[in-house]
Length: 183
Image 1 (tube, helix red, strand yellow):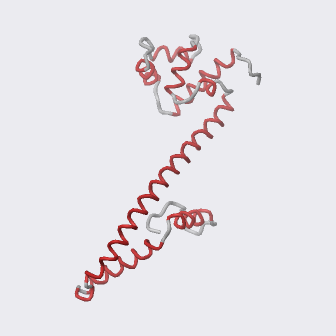
Image 2 (spheres, helix red, strand yellow):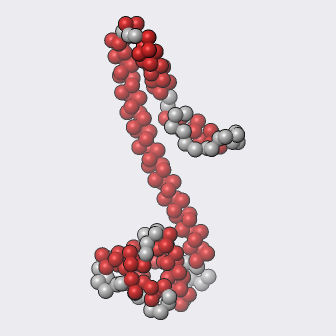
């Protein structure tokens, strides 16, 4: 495709805008409301409908505002639809991976904090006098302490590596590959 603007880019933009609006679960009225909130006082559901039917021309300022409303930039929405769909999936997957990375980093910090607290509590465990507890409670405390020792000895990076290996190995019968927080 030529890098020079063409009338097809208007068609691409509106086609991709509609696809993105629908992907986001927005109705035409929702998009119109977002445009009003962005300062386009007379932008209505009817305006969106006429744009999507190509019964009304798209103005440059509207294109920028509409792109902002659907969290995409105007040149991106001007791609041919088949290229837009691929690029949009890539952008979405990248965003999701970045979000997952942030969640993982946060979870790692929480894990480190909790295992530090466990280390402290394990140091205090001598005061428990487990031998003086009834058998059931003593058994639960010992099991909890054994689990705490495993957690204290675990490094977050090793836990993540083990989970990745678990997910990547060939499935066994009944293995749904879901996240198992008890593992």
